[in-house]
View 1 (cartoon, rainbow, N blue to C red):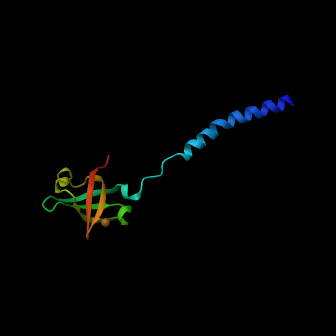
View 2: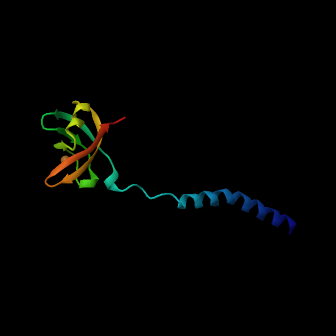
View 3: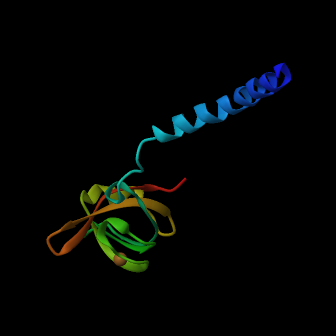
Length: 109
Ligand SMILES: [Cu+2]
């Protein structure tokens, strides 16, 4: 009888860390919304005069768009100054009327 009790205590002790880990997992924060996600792109042309940029981009979930090459207006034309052809970028897009406007863009690491 004594031997059996000892075995039970050992089993519980071994299980305790796993239980604690599981509880911590449940409190994890939900993933960021699609609207806050940055899309991947590559600069094909920079039009400083128009404040626009031609990008070859991946899927953009926030505006429901698949991968393609297209022109975007820049929210601030000065954003064009930091970009050049061939740059790999991460960017966020917003629908403004008929236009898709890049609200933020930075070089991908
Ligand atoms: Cu597109």
